[in-house]
Structure formats: structure tokens, C-alpha cells
Amino acid sequence: MVSVKFTRADKRVTLPRYESGGAAGMDLRAFLDAGVLIPPLGRVKIPTGLRIEIPEGFEGQVRPRSGLAVKHGITVLNSPGTIDSDYRGDLDIILINLGADDVIIKDGERIAQLIIAPVSRACPVETDSLSATERGEGGFGSTGV
Image (cartoon, rainbow, N blue to C red; front, side):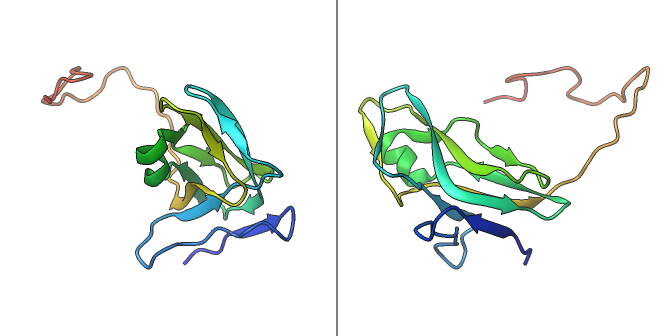
């Protein structure tokens, strides 16, 4: 277990939690004074009322909730969103409505999930050539359907 620190903007704010024993992500909830309408193809930044301190060597990944996606077409726009270990600002979620109908996000509604994952940092090395592989330069769709 990795300890992740949170501060709450208000006593009403619920700390994220795993909703089942096997859940990979902690659910994040909207912190709103009033419902927020998201029209079709509209996007909004929804506050959670949280700030976070992720340990060095880890990141937070903000991902959509499948229930909102299948029922309403709501997803996290920059999915997965990355929260770096040195970020200390407000934890807001950018949602987009890809559905055909208006959707209202209510205070306390579960809007995204947070995954805490280890980070490997790479050391860029310039070279004159790259090793050959069977795939080679085959890009998008080159490995089949």
C-alpha cells in the first residue's frame, strides 16, 4: 500500500475510496454548489474539492467511470489524465459529453476514478540508428485488425 495525502476544501468533500475489494481505482466525486449541465459535445471542468500529495516515484491517473460512459456518454476528456507527484493544486476533472442528450452532474456524484501507479523515468539517448525488428516502420493498423 502506498500512502497518498489529501486535503479537503470543505467538510462536505468525501475522500476518494475504493468501492469494492478488487477495485483498481478510487472514485472521485463532484464538489458543486449546484448541478452542472453538460450539453452534447460540451466539456466542463468539475471540481472535486480535493488537493493531493502523491509520493515521488508515483503518478495519479484520472480515468473515466464506465457507468457514466455507457449510460450517458460522459468521459474524461484527457484520459488518462496524469497528476504528477510534485503537483499540489486543485484536483479538477475535465468531463465531455459524447452522448446525444444534456447531462447534469450533481454534487457528490462519482465522476472519475483515480489510479495510483509507479513511474519509470527514461534517459533519452541520441543515436545514429535503431535496431531492426520484424515490424520495422509499420505504424497505425500495420499489425492487423
